[in-house]
Length: 425
Image: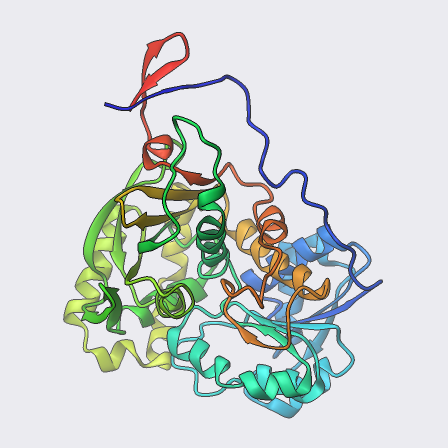
């Protein structure tokens, strides 16, 4: 039996006192794929944090820019530039005088080149992407020495998950031993044994067909998790686990997917066991993904053209369901230690379409502030984000719940009140 005392009123964020550094005056930021759902959300959040910024949205056609302005009138001050994502010279022309390029043109699965990063290194422009694919992130990291030589700071997988979730894990590992000596606080030792990433998004989270394409493509990729230091290959959309995301979201089923924070976490943290799971609502969507992963030939699920066509056909129906289930997003990061204690972090936002933009804009701000060293880095590396409280302060804008270094029972839903502010879990 675990008992804790609850004090009424909202507690102060541990990042309220974080000083936000200045960035270059009127920075020019080019967003490749900037007219899409993720790109336009990022642009909106950049204008919120840096109102004087010159924001350029890059896409193949002017029509997509006009549609983005209809969805987000606050982007009326932005400019448009036409470019081709796979044409490095086209990208170079678009970013040559920029202070930062942000690559949001997914899906990143089955991409054969890192043309935007290559263009950024050539033009000596800082770079950020929201990649959520293991192979792409490794390909990006292979440019490490070129980026260092060119003096270009770059971050790959710098969105919400992966991205903010990685930094949450890094922050908890960094600060767990510094937690206050309280009865309710998790006091794990410094050596972690396992990290569990669990994600939930209602419907597509308002992110459009791209997230649907990404999920289909991931259903065709074998999952590599790590158990006691040994890589284990598993079926995609498997090993269901019920996770309690707190009272705002409740208990949800999540499934193993091939996500890059597993490989990067193993490399950076040297944690023996690590895995990542994702689930959606309504629950039949998850059942459908299980069936898809088992019955559809892997070669079909790995074909970008086929998957894109399927996603476009399903998009109107998916949007209809999205209107019913909403677009809530939740991330639970659990760090287990050798003495079996657990430090948990929870991030909940009512709108993925807004939260993904705030998260990506937070990484962009840190890059503009000169926080990142030259090279190509994962988000959890100190060279990428040395000031983790700053990143987390900016990324958590608008969250419904944001907790770090808590015991799991402090996060779980439905505590039983005994009276006098005392709760039993």
